[in-house]
Amino acid sequence: MPIPTPTPTESSKDFLERCMSDEIMLNEYPDQSQRFAICSVSYDKEKMQLKNCENTVNNAESAKP
Image (cartoon, rainbow, N blue to C red):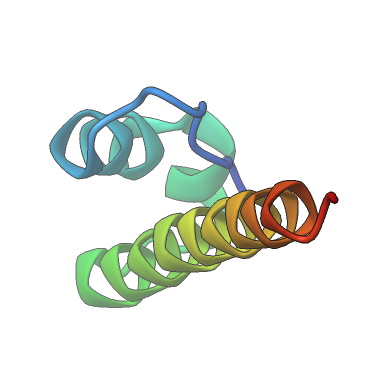
């Protein structure tokens, strides 16, 4: 089942609350500690990808003549 992903402007707290209470996540991962770990990794991964994209755009813009 798909693991929730944060929206670009969603805070860590808001995302974790949403992810932890997601019906699919509750069914797939009834253990709260495991669900928290998965939600935390999902948040960190998505934010890291967003940061990498921003860095790529910034690097491309600064390389323009």
